[in-house]
Length: 326
Image (tube, rainbow, N blue to C red):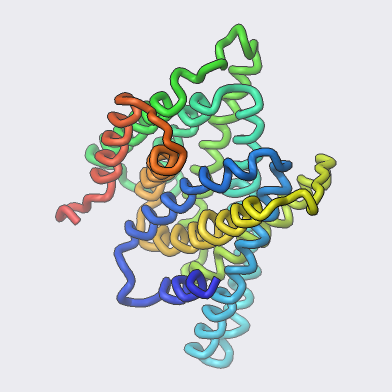
């Protein structure tokens, strides 16, 4: 926990790395959730998401308080009220981010997985970079050049191949096996991709006065409240005494690294990066899961997945390159 807090304290440093580094790290950490996800797969989903968010919030409270205290010391006495008013005005946008980026995204993914195969869900959600670019062009007036269009296309195609290589052609998810529910599942997965895209674009509307640590804590707290309500409304029941040490460790990793640090890095990177580029970097999430599945679980996805990984990395590299080849 101390290491996590120390890392968070460096997030606002002038000597910190390029924002694209933070975006890549954010999605790599988020993708690493496949590791704790295996251990937590048998637990109620809303409870699992809420518990990991609660742990993440505990990690984020200290850095957020330190960030707010630092800003108070560096501003004039009357600016404290202005900062509080800024946070209050941003609450609806923060709540919308919590809804689309955390709560609704996870609900739609869970519902999609109940109706179709994991590989098909992964392929459908690979539309996130393209959807983010379209929304950024429409609502943020971002210019999407030919190089970035090509990069996004490579990311989308690469992630689709990555998922095909990891899960085959969605084994056991034929139309005959799932009936009409398969199409519903694909629609729900596309809805999840759209939700993530809305989350990406909304971040560019947040007031610049809100730091990444404060924003991460606020969004996580709001998402925790939403997920807790969803868990109670769905009638989930959990025997806390039945949770073993391995699951406790999985919750800790999920909350600290795949949630708290991932959001800290994401909000730090998105402050200085175009939303369309941030959307393209979401390709690191399935790529991270792909690599960890090979290293930790011994999976062998085959050449199709390897080709998809290369294409996805190439596409993200194209999107990250600036006019001067940065």
